[in-house]
Image (cartoon, rainbow over all chains, first blue to last red; front, side, top):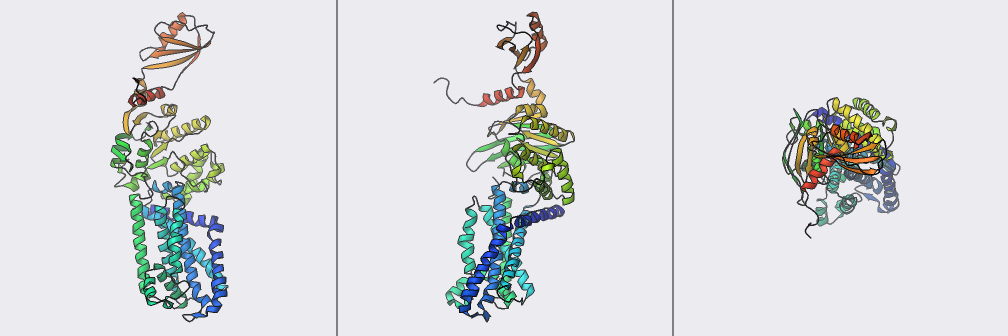
Length: 257
Length: 312
């Protein structure tokens, strides 16, 4: 593999993706910020005041890390799925496939574009959260590494969705029927210690739980799960999903006739 | 050195359609090569396989000696492709489309901008560089796809109907441009439904029909196979009826327009002697139909079964 060629190709793809996010910021950046503000107002401020504390923190502080993580993963996913499926639909994905750039670079370029959007939105939501509550970062390294790794997982998942999608409806199915339920049941709004033991065990099968809790541990210093275990699961997902995407592109599934 | 070597290339689509039935093609470096065929003959499938957009069923393809399976990076780096269908982000700017494509070939942004300026200027698009591609006319979009295909300065340029839907003035300026590119050393493979275009530009021609190559030779050779040509003669003085020209079939189309058919062995000198003998002065003449077009239709039609049995 020509590393220099692929490095330039990667930079080109990443630049293109970031410019796309910035160009249509009203569609990409603003809506999640508004949605999260509403969450903070309704769940944090209005309802949260009646809930009191959770794991020793007031409810607004407790849900803030989960809401930030939720915005990061949904936007990382949404960016890659819409960008790559859009390129497939408009046939300009062919610009990449006829070039000598490797399939791994094509995946990384799109995925890092998704991560970039996730981080942009995540930063904005953090600023919004600071308007409602005080947040200090207990473990900065864990906070930043988890947010990037979780964002990578969902960007890679978005790529898988885009590869298989044949029509626009197909890119909405996974976020609606899989991503949203897993996110809401992933401990964003509650600690799984509140659940009966059986549902606690079921919740441990939800990968989003590990991401939300690891991120919460990074900020608040509390978590329902073991952090090392969370890292291992997230990294396993990244490796598995990257390999899956690479195999799909190499075999031309969903992209070549 | 061959720019392109295709050996026994086959493609069967999942629905069972056999698009390519084992084609063989050798394109010499520096050639201007026409790949012709009716709709659905397999031209675009062949181009799709060469450019890695379509998975082949079997066979081998090499680009300047690089096998597209074992050395895809080197093979792809040699190819520039202008597809039949528009395949660019219509919401992106003209400049971005070209510069990004250069980036995918590992060309740094500074060089890409210089090359984009060069090719967009040559293709008369530089003034529109900041416009979104969707704002361009059909002809401009085609020219943009050519600029995009050239930005990494490929050794092999593949053009799949590049002038479809383009007006004659722009088509001719594109011919001139492609001629210059070819003279500068770029091998060009052209598919087109304008056979005049192929006859004017190409030195070799392959005709593909129903997934098989049915003719593959020099353009001059194939034109020599034409058995009969019809010329349209414009006359100085009007005629009332078609003259009896010994050895030639003549039809008076209008009072000053005469159509004369010449067999392969007839010469125009003999025709002019006969016309002279009848006191007919010719002011100008032209072929009634494009020569390659006549041959193409004959070759393809001879392979097709009649839609309705003549005996019914």
